[in-house]
Length: 196
Length: 380
Image (tube, each protein chain N blue to C red):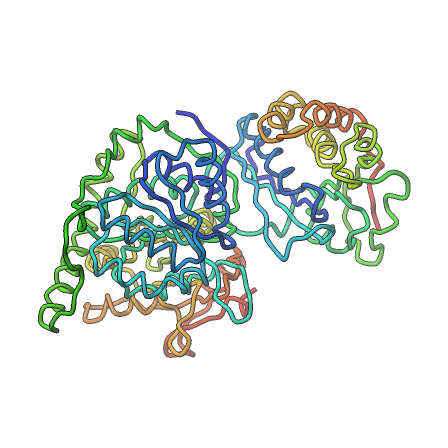
C-alpha cells in the first residue's frame, strides 16, 4: 500500500474489453484497501477504434475528477497504436506494460522519448488468449491476461483479489479467464529500461 | 453496510429500485444510457416492483410520467442533453401540474455540433421550468440524492431534477454504500401524495384560466419552492440518523483568513476540494441546490467570511452573457455592502478542469475585463 495517488491509463481498441478491464482492476485494488475508480471517455466507440480507459486509486476517498494526464502506469493492449499517444505524460520512473511478443519496441517513437527511464514489461497476451480459447468470433480477448500481468508488475493487487474481481465482473468463460489471468501473472517479463 | 464498485448511473438505477417506484418511463441517450439499461435489467429479473415502459421518445417518457403521477403513482425518468431539450414543453407542464416527479439528467453538451462532454447547458436551459435542481459530485451523492429527491418532491408537490456530470460521474465506477431496500424503506415509505385523477370519476384538469389565477398558482409554486432549503436540511437530519451521511444545500470549506473562494457544482467541486490543500488560502463553495437558488444563505456565507473574490467555475455559457452560475451569484449579491468581485472560468463544452488551469485562473486578475471572464482553453 502506498499513500500516494496512483494513476493508470489503458490503451486498446474497441472490442478488446479495456473498459471492463479497468473496472476489474479497480475492484481488485478496492479489495486491497484502496479507494479505486475506473472510468472511460467516449468517442464514437466501435470495434477496432482506439479506446482509452483510466484507473485512479488512493487510500483517501477524495480524488480529483479529471482525466489522467500523467499516469504512473500505461497499459498497452495493442502495440500497433500510435506510440507517441501511448507514452504521453507517463511519469518519470513510470511503468509501461505492452501486449507484445518480440519486437515490442518497434512502434515506440524514438524521437520523442524523453530523457527519462520507463520500466518496460511485455506479455504475449495474444498467444495466451488463443491458448485459452478466449475469443469473440475470431477476435482474441486479451484483457484478463493483461490484468494478470499488471497485478504482478504493480504489486497493487494480489492474484487472489484479481480472481475474486474477475468472478464478480466477468459473466462468460469465467474459468478460462481466471486461467488466462494466472498465466499472464506468471509470464510477464521485464525487458528493461528504455532511455534516449 | 455493503460497498459496491458501481458507476454513477448504476447507482441511480439501484436507488430507484430501493425507493420503490410504480412506473419508470425512459428513453436511452448517451451518457444516461446505463441508467435505463440497469433499470431494464432489474425489471427483467422481476425486481423493479413497478412498471417499466419503453417509450418512443423523451417527450413520451415524461408524458407517461405525468399521466401516472396524476393518478398518484411514484414515477421516475432520466435523460441527457437533446433528450431533455426534447422534453421541454412537458417539463413545464409537470411542474405547473404540481406533480412530484423525479428525473435524473446527466449533463452533456447540446449540438450543433455533436459533443458528448458534460456541458451543463442542458439542465441550465431548464432553469426556469419550476423544477428543483440539485447538482451532485459523486456516485454516492447521486444515490443518496435520488432517495432524498423523492422525499423533497412529495412533500413540496414539485418535481425534482437530480443532475450530475456525464463520464466524470456517470461512467466512473467507484465505491458506493448500497443499503438494502428495507433500510431505504425506513427513510422513505410508499407515496402518500394525493391523486389528481381517479378511475371512474369525471373532471377537467388544468383547463383554461385567467392571468390572475395563473399568477396565484405561480406564486404558490414559487413560495413552496422557497421552502426547499429548510426542508432539505430536515430531510438530511432524518437521512443522517439512518445512513450516517448528510448533505448541505451549500457545502463550504473556507479556511480562516481566505479572501478568495471558488464556487462551483458537481464533479469540478470535487476536483477543487482535492486541490485545496495545495492552494494557498483559497476556499470552496460547492453549490448543491441551484433551484431554488439559496441566495440568502450564499449572501450570509460570503458576508460572514468577508470574501473579497469569488471565482466561479461554469461548465456552461449563456451565449451573449457568460457563465450562468456567475450570473446567478452576481444577482444574489447585488446590493450587498462590500460585495466580492466575481470572476468566471468558463469550461463550456464540458472542458476538463485541470489543476494548472485552476492555478492560472487564481493568478489572473479580472481588471482587464469588466466581467472577469476567462475561457478554460486559454489557461491550459
